[in-house]
Length: 301
Ligand SMILES: [Zn+2]
Image (cartoon, rainbow, N blue to C red):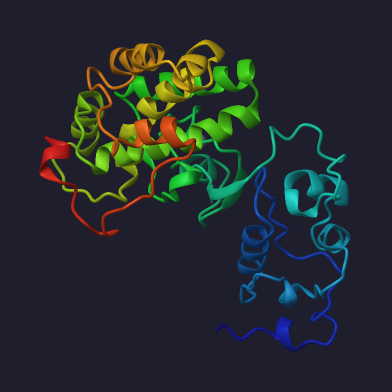
């Protein structure tokens, strides 16, 4: 731990004067991430609560950070969702309700002169930095490694389709169905069901190197398939056929899945995750591989 006069000063244990390096917050940054960066930039040991900056429980953190950085408290509340008022009226431009956190695009951070990892609040569809064409990791999958998507226009096209679905069907509906769809596609993959598009995409992304089930490129490879299934399950027409007592209509829906989602695989059997979802209204109980388990050869070749 570095020894600094700042820590032992009775004034600076609860400072109110401007810090020498008042680094700006990143858009939608988590409070813990910003406090950590602010403390490190000013030679203070990092902690999640801002105690080293003189912040105590019950303080108005936006006001204190405003005094420390010279930034308007409302500007800080806009950048840092956790500082917003409960009714969030102060942040009308936030895209949807952020529900997860993950690392900001490393290239965007580098361009902003930030060397440390920045954690951001994100909505479920913020999986790509379109500016840099980088896969940031699905918040649902807790991925951390980022990927260059140059040469993978299908993943970028899926992201645009995902955004269009949100515009047409509503964010909440798409979020719920996407979670289910991503889980079904993941389970198909774990069960080694034939998903040739996922296999081809994965082979292209991994470029010969070994990977595990938790590797972010596995999630990127499944993403377009999950979005395609989301498109069907949020369509009123196809949803009506999918959840229908008439088997003929259900088979019509499943054939549509084979034609437009799975490249020919027709969901078959009670253990199929999609069939289970249609029959029970909830995804099947998951049996996942060990986190570090290598990807099965049959799922990647
Ligand atoms: Zn970026």
